[in-house]
Image (cartoon, rainbow over all chains, first blue to last red; front, side, top):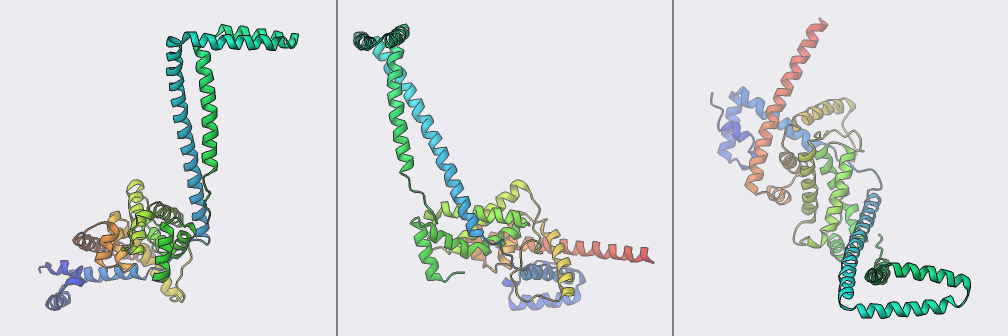
Length: 179
Length: 198
């Protein structure tokens, strides 16, 4: 016995015309194989349709809000880290560039700045012996460093501090959204 | 489910960044979304995680939601895509249609004997459903559990209507054939048990 097209029709109940439905019913009455398939199909679909609705455990919304807040916190932290890394990279690059430039082009200027620093130290060391000794040590230490690196370090310090303050201001000014 | 006007207001507010309005949407849609995830993934724990993730994705994409589209379809679409991806990645066990962890919502149930028979059948359906591809499972669940039209399923799963029809046809044929095979195996086992008892 031929099972097609009846076998295919079993799974196309929505699109069958009246004649096709009648032919299918007649075939199912005669053909045990197709009838078994038909019954199996209706059984499975019936069980899927009758499956009970399930509900999540109470407090689903609260758990969602908690996850959302957690995600936000993580995102803020990651953003902060990325921003800090970028700022640091920019500062290091800028310091190196500016320091190198000043060292090669404006040596007299750096000398003047260092000279002024020396005068200031001399004034300070007159206050007392202790301070004088400390000043001499500090002066000696400063003298031992190359002028360009001193200059670059001071620029980097000032820049980092101001950017750090600025980023703290930006992060703290972000609103914390709550439900 | 909320009424349409209230839902539209919540959606509009949520799109403007109102967390409380989105929270109301979560409250309203937690059951349909959770059920879909539960049908797809099979355990209460996975369903909880998946439905939470679906809502988080919906929250992130809320501004992109087209208000001309049905919100139910949209949110179920997010949940189905997430579950399909998860199943493809993890090849986890297919769901038990039987509810063993979460509480059923239906009020009056059948008698204990009828429930026992139904539970056995549902366990058998679970076994045969496991053989279906993730997208075919979604099509079956959306069609026969959510009673969605072909058009809605197509919209939910980003398929064409003809693709939905052909997937459903194939899924039903496979389900029926697997069901018959499983029934045969059960009856053979039953006969063997009877023979050994004699």
